[in-house]
Length: 38
Image 1: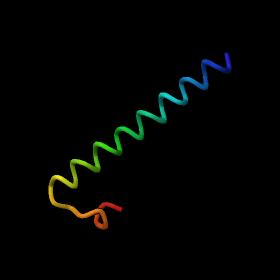
Image 2: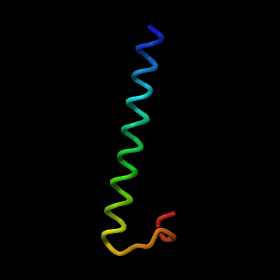
Image 3: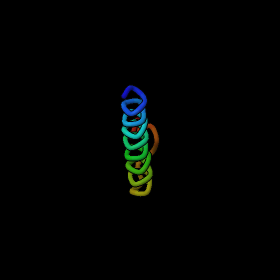
Image 4: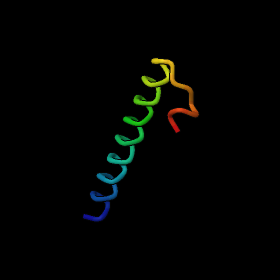
């Protein structure tokens, strides 16, 4: 059971990381600088 929860946690972390990565790329595409984003 604990291994299953670890896998769910890992998938959640990857999903959040992916979403922030894509969001950053979109914002950079609209002309924002890294300093504006972070």
